[in-house]
Length: 75
Length: 223
Image (cartoon, rainbow over all chains, first blue to last red; front, side):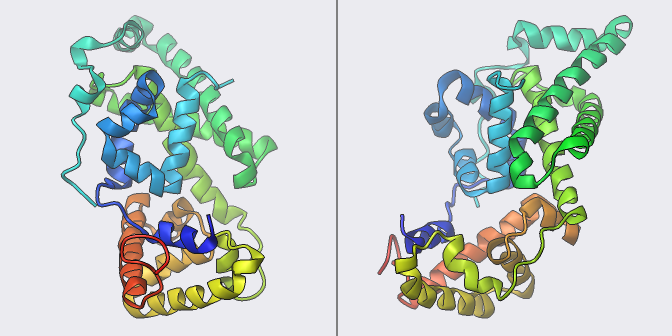
């Protein structure tokens, strides 16, 4: 991806994006679906949350950390 | 941003309060029985502390923390997460596993604490105009720099011309200067959600402006 494309992608917004507050409300449910059925299933069931996690770095970090915790990589 | 996109939580997860898994049921039971509560809280705190340590280790390089400070933050995050969990236990509806729900509070506490930590040890400001580093921020290769500078200049003009003063301040801090969202929320006395929405609106306005100017395609890629 070129820098131009990266900037273009960053500026694009997804109208399904539910925002941080709503994404955090259901993050535990979303993570359980990801760990049980995979990211694709979770994304289909919660498109607004998936859209948000793709765009929001801090919420994406919380998602990564929570998924690591529940999938047993917490040591 | 769609407020109509509220996921159908119970149906999507396939769980309701009555469909609790055995482990979650046991957590709720032991936390409700006075004779077992203290022991259950101690076990839960241990789990939260392990999760906090692991999460801080995972983020340590980016956050620039380690050693005693990291250990302190892990304890603070676990303590505060436990407090939040016990205060909100009646809101747990069994739509996820109890431990997943509980770990979520650790992640939120770790993020909030790292946001505050940022200002105790802020990175040394880089020399020069932060706008000059925009091509690098978006991974422009040296070969692209000259062309990208034209787009960066247009971006800068758009930020000045189409954003409100508050949107401009937030966009520049996060996107141009690289201040973490949670840290900026602490500095501005705001929330991650409020600032994200502000940047979301700013991105939409800037993109529409750049597309109208012919810098970006209306739907995809370069014009």
